[in-house]
Image (tube, rainbow, N blue to C red; front, side, top):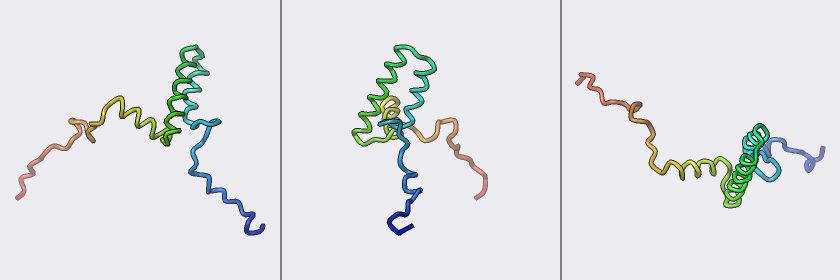
Length: 95
């Protein structure tokens, strides 16, 4: 092969997997529609497609859009640990 004909297989490994023009992770919702085919699941799938398409047009990936939706639902304050798992102050008696 000449220098210009070398194909680099690894250069596309970080590209997101696409399902037509959408992120492939939307395929989960498509699976739900195929397993439980009702008009409301089809409408819900269309709504999810529209929402994530709008987020992609604004420059957010599927994962970032999911985090933005989660943030909108639960709010901005989220402690790192729940109160039962936080470390307690312990006096070891050594001084």
